[in-house]
Image 1 (cartoon, rainbow, N blue to C red):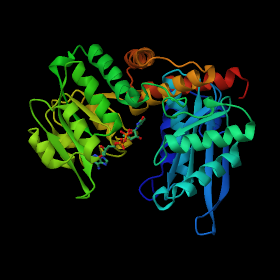
Image 2 (image 1 turned 90 degrees about the vertical axis):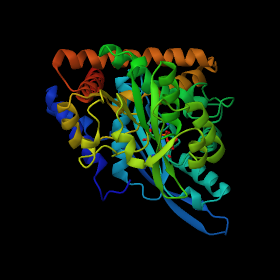
Image 3 (image 1 turned 90 degrees about the horizontal axis):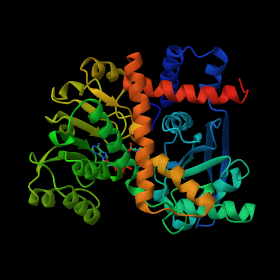
Length: 428
Ligand code: NAD
């Protein structure tokens, strides 16, 4: 999140510029889309438990809302930067467009470390954030969600403040609410399952049977666990996952060549917060260095932990057996490595397509909240599968027709859809 390594906003703009040139976007539209439509920067005074008042800095960026209300999380982070939020807001615009949901892109943040704040202080901070921006957000304007270091509890405080200000019940103002308080069934599974819906379609397109494949996954959190579960249901074998070990302050890879017991590993995480090495050994796992997840002789790699994980420094460790990379995490592959992956003929399912299941389910939550009618889990997952499959097919077909790398094809579709919306509205 620090600006020292690279500037994510410049990166997002560079990605945009590249595709704007591919599609020959006119100068006006290009200038309009390469920056946010609106930015809110504000201070949030919070009365602390010791009686003092502390001032926090809050931001909300609405990159584009031509296709529908802006959508994106609010994150808490001590080193948050405005350029990170700008980039994330822009990526949200493309993500919502690629899965063709009627939402735009937004993102917000507060510079703070919630671990050093009491519950009451966090509640005041959430309510203070909403008070500063309540007139410029809402079910028809801009719909927030949880993000780094924010969760359902924060969302409910924000919703309550919004409803107090506006008078009434507006559950569609925010997503990521707990089930029973306006949340959607299936949200827990949505991102990981979405990764596998797109992977299933990729394997079909490549004429590979899932049951003939093996996978290695970086991470074993929300996205990775549900991706692993569904992939195994399709007949694939997960032979390695990795996980951060807080006690040792490093990551490890857990490998079992004839296939990991994903449900048992999930049980370990539920009990211990992460993968306990002794318990994993009892299940027959070998414990390897954290980076080894990338070097496994598997058909599929699923980075589902962090950004900037497949880099110039380690890309050569990828086995010649690997046929597909499905990016569960946001930005796990550095831009300079795309060329190498392309040359090696590894099929890439880019992050904003592969992991769009989360925002798609958030959109379903919003629809359910706005209509005050909640769907069964099977219905949510069925609708999710339809959306993800259609999105994959559109990107795949364009990639085939125009001989484009999948990431570029996904961008072409998204940027074209958003450019068309701003033109149809007569904005440019
Ligand atoms: P999470 O916090 O539940 O899990 C993260 C996992 O990564 C944990 O298992 C952790 O141990 C592991 N990890 C952390 N550092 C690591 C390292 N250096 N090496 C190996 N493993 C490491 O997070 P999540 O919700 O699963 O999100 C994972 C990624 O997916 C993030 O990039 C996130 O932005 C992205 N994403 C998540 C969602 C969602 O709905 N959860 C949606 C879209 C994108």
